[in-house]
Image 1 (cartoon, helix red, strand yellow):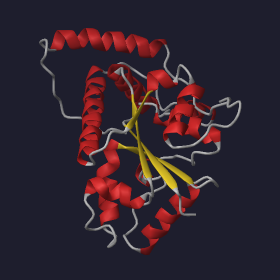
Image 2 (image 1 turned 135 degrees about the vertical axis):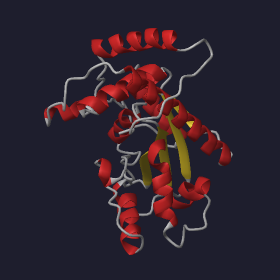
Image 3 (image 1 turned 180 degrees about the horizontal axis):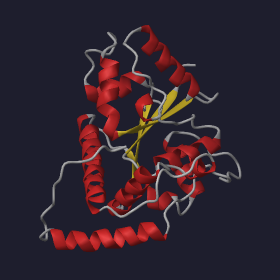
Image 4 (image 1 turned 90 degrees about the vertical axis):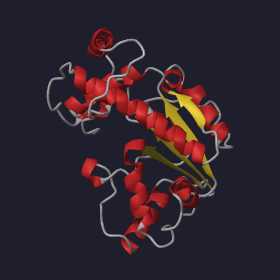
Length: 258
């Protein structure tokens, strides 16, 4: 199926993109957004096969899987693998000469841009660090697997991820600037307060009417933050104050993001 309307949810890890995807799936009208372009190396569906017909077939499968019967397609893309996606698409002759900032617009019809942001970047970095240590990135995983290890406070790890969050958001902002567009912004802190109202607002942005008496129940993802997260946030903020002068940003080499 060729979608009539499409959208990309742009984000950085632990910004709430998965939660927004699940909310939109519950409508039955807004596609089936997933991280379809996440490499198989990181548990995603995109196998790094050579370019050509196999890659075209994969893109066709993504469009079919991510589109609801009303012709709406959705996908979730993270900043840290955008370059890899661009490189793979540029291997196809039909996209080889398309500038990076125009690739997605050429790939997805009637494209709408949704930017998922978390206001509290430190809590985002803490969430990312904890998920990376335990291997549990979504609450439903606890039903299928045990954590890899007990999480422990690591200032350097959290600090590096905090910088990656900031760099990722700056990267998306630059991307939108190159595209000369203003994305529709959804803030994680607003979404968790009211799933329904924020989801309806996104539907309206896409030109879709919400189902009557729309309710979001039994989401497969739930808030994972607990007392450990709060303890780490406080400890990180205290240590950060002692390790840098006001207005000076500490820099270290980032660890692998995922």
